[in-house]
Amino acid sequence: MRRNNRHPFRAMALMSAILTQLAGCTLFGIFCGNWLDKRLGFEPLFLVVGLLIGLAAGVFAVQRTVRQYFSGD
Image (cartoon, rainbow, N blue to C red; front, side, top):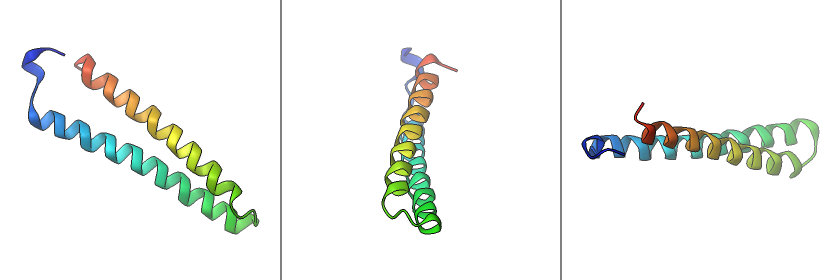
């Protein structure tokens, strides 16, 4: 990262984007898994699967965001 790209507001925006993406994807996976469990009757199965898929999607989104931030786009 270049020296002139270091702005405190850009860093705060990056941190809030990371938090939002990771927490949002994880919570979405949990809620979808819980909904499927109640609908289909498999109590903890889809909750755990939804949690893992949400975490994976969140990590992928965070990785893409951080790459864009440091590439200077």
